[in-house]
Image (cartoon, rainbow, N blue to C red; front, side):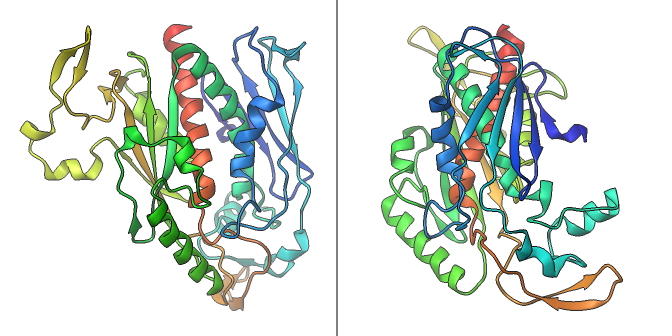
Length: 357
């Protein structure tokens, strides 16, 4: 499956299944001589792991990462880095009642039709469980970006259902985001979001929302014409995340309501550098970073797995009623925040190597 890899010079291949013995990633292209340890990676995985609060899946996974290749005496060698995470809380029996049917809005039907076989335990490769190795790889990419460019990537939950947090992107810090379990930088709005998620969770239902991301310190010149524009690469990465359904860059759809005279970002000189007075371009023009903050938003649908009875069909096309059991997120947004940051880091690291070597 060639779709299991992302990047060209900084290339990450993701492998494993939701309820298999382990999951992992192979990272190629990491510069040699960089100090690297589990301590650089584990904090990002701890932010993504299940069971961390009352509003996420209660699957008990420590997501402890092992680095099994690519290091000598704590430094990268320039050879492939292998990352392994052992699955500890598999409950395949929770899925035994769906072996012969297709769950609505899941990958059951499409995987069966494409491959003629599917992994029913947690959806196999379709599960958000497989984002953990990408988050681990993203932590390596982020360390490279910080050392090279002092880049700062900050994502947060902007909305859950119709509850919206309105903040100035450049002012948001990770410390603010991590102050509550829903990862919204506005404490009052966060409490409303948590209450809404709790309410829907008790009903066996789910909610969607939007993750906003602001990237500061991006150097000039990242991005390649025509098909590898930086925003295209970011869109590709974000839309590969489970449950993502939309990507909006810079002014996004709101820009369609503006006149060009208001939308254009005018250049000025400021402190011996050229900047723009506005940032409707979202930090990228003609597919290449212009030195301003990169801003984008990712829309996530309501989780497809509901703890309610639903109607569907089985492999024979017969109408059936079913109800799932197990541990599932009522809203993916809180755990999507570190995933969005990781995928952004993978894209930027790849383009940094492509531009600067």
